[in-house]
Length: 185
Image 1 (spheres, rainbow, N blue to C red):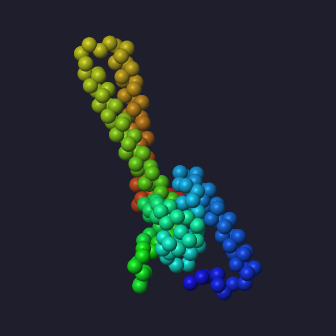
Image 2 (image 1 turned 180 degrees about the vertical axis):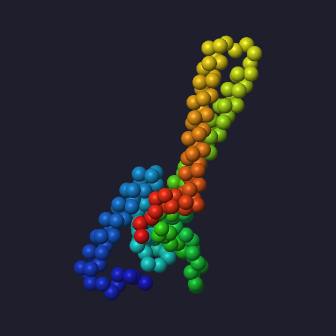
Image 3 (image 1 turned 180 degrees about the horizontal axis):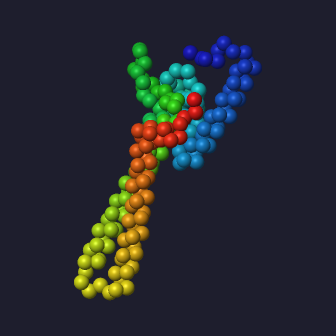
């Protein structure tokens, strides 16, 4: 059903212009976070839909191929920004936006940060083990041991940061962050 069907041409034009501005802004904002502009536009278009949509409907709305649309939908779904929903009488997958921008932000950054933290902590811990092996060598010079101690201290400081960042991510995932920075009512 066309939600704009009952509007005058002027109302339709004004509404579409207003929505396009928001959709463009959403696209640019998501582009800053490493999500392509077209996927940002896809989310923006879906944000204004009154009902869940199929890949075909969004492909037609945006003039994108079904393959590109499928990739965009999968990306948004993986980022927890859209949900797959059931529609009575429909055999096609239906998608709708998760309208809670606070949760979208939390999910997006949690997913990205968690992966980076795990990779970085793994590299740092591996380096600490290698330093311990080097320190255990019996023929190490005083200068070399001093460098190893210095590097070990720096890596341990970095691990403290990543453990803190891990707790921050936990607070996003649990929603605890909103006790410190409440959502605007």
